[in-house]
Length: 354
Image: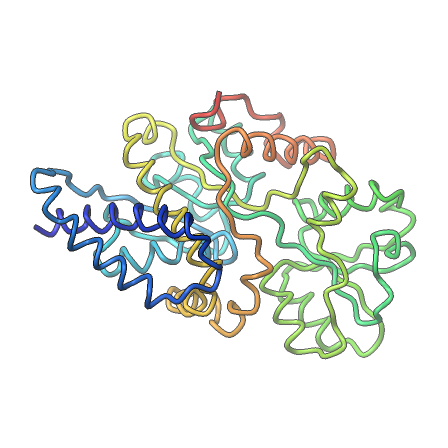
């Protein structure tokens, strides 16, 4: 009976999503209305699955402590309550290095991680992982405390504090500057710090004029601590304006162990359906999502609630995913091939995309 009820809940959520989309439901729909309709659908459909024999699978899912994990908080809650499609256990890590070896071995089956880290892992493991979707677009922002940065060109002559030397934040910033005709080695001074918290603290306490590039939710932390600070530029929007051709910043992806995906296509499909609903929930009910972000130790709810609208949490799959990921990786490859593992991934990097 418990298995049948779980199946019913999944089916009812799918039907409810279709019904709501047809009615043009706004992003701020009342969560209590959703809950009532879901239960009603559940009761109506329970009799239709009497012969279902599906047994839950044990799945370990890893994610980084930040925006790449936020999109799946509803799945975490459902798993905790025993209402998820499978028996998910979640590992929230500080760095991707904490779970990449296990993802290659198959001890972690699914992971949300930086786009370039997924490409590097694919190259170094000879294709033992694949990407299933983009779950986070750009989360980088330029902040200033002087109100005179209104375009990328305005960064010329400035000192820019940032993190990520030798990693994607540096390559993203350098590409953005070069696209605007600014020499990143001559026309600006980029001062790197080891941690985003260090940059946030510096910008929050700096009494003079400062410019910094930070990811969310550290941006929100700075804005909360320093009334002079403001978001001057959305790096993703500026990238898209300068790069064109449907190019964008791809921060995070959902990856899967290749052997697991091959042997368990239905399990993978169920997870992605749950992820789709979870990401939609996060974007439509920010306050409830923020409470879950704190419950699962990702960030404090107060910060998360303000940061989520700026985290570009999404789910992009199929050919659109492949186009955006490949174009982003080609930029990183042009800056430093080592940033993606030495070479552009082959077509089999993308799960179920021809």
